[in-house]
Structure formats: structure tokens, C-alpha cells
Image 1 (cartoon, rainbow, N blue to C red):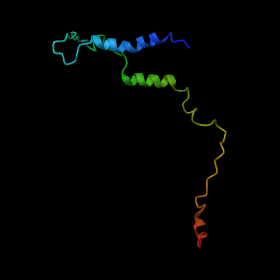
Image 2: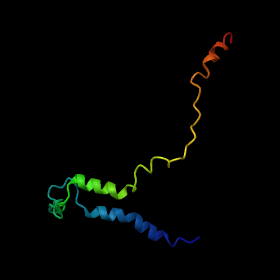
Image 3: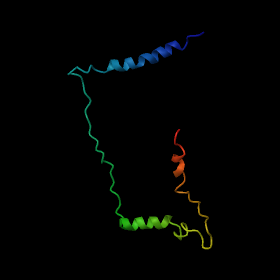
Image 4: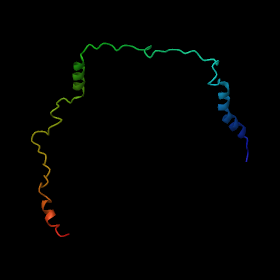
Amino acid sequence: MSCSFLPGVAALALLPLAALARQPHPADAGAAVPATTYHSAFTDYRAAAADEASPDQIWRAANRAVAPADAQAAQTPPPGSRQPEAPRPDPHAGHGDHHTMQGK
């Protein structure tokens, strides 16, 4: 078994300690402090272009763009076709079951 990678691993493990050694102690009042700079969040701000249409006109145009040609056709079946009705459940089913459970 070869240990040729051990010096490299040791150097990587000690690298954070070397970085900490360069920083001044936090309690040192005479330590050099980098100058603070101010960068406004609005430096690159660009105002939105004024729309020529009002918001309701934009909204209606967007609805027209995505709506089908005949909105009612998408909701109703074609004339002459009947869809079978689903059977309705009996609203009184199971009402008498509690009478047969007496004595148990």
C-alpha cells in the first residue's frame, strides 16, 4: 500500500488554518478594516415602457388569443347527441339496517 497521496491530503487539511492565520484578531481595535462601499439596488433600474392600451384592453386581448373560436361549442355536446345519465343512488339505501342489528 502506497502513501504518496498523504502529503497532499495533509496540505489540503491545513489550508483553512493558513487562511485564518492572516486575519486580524476580532478584538484588536487597531486592526485595519476595509473601506465600506455603497451600491444602490436601483443603479441599473429601467422604468417599464408605458403601454398604449389600458389594462382591461390587454386582458381582453389575451383572453381572445387563447379562447376557442366558439366558446359554447367547447362546453356543450353537438346537437342531436345525448349523453347517458348516470344512475342515481337510492337516497334511502341502508336506512333499515339498524333495525336488524338488535340483540347483537
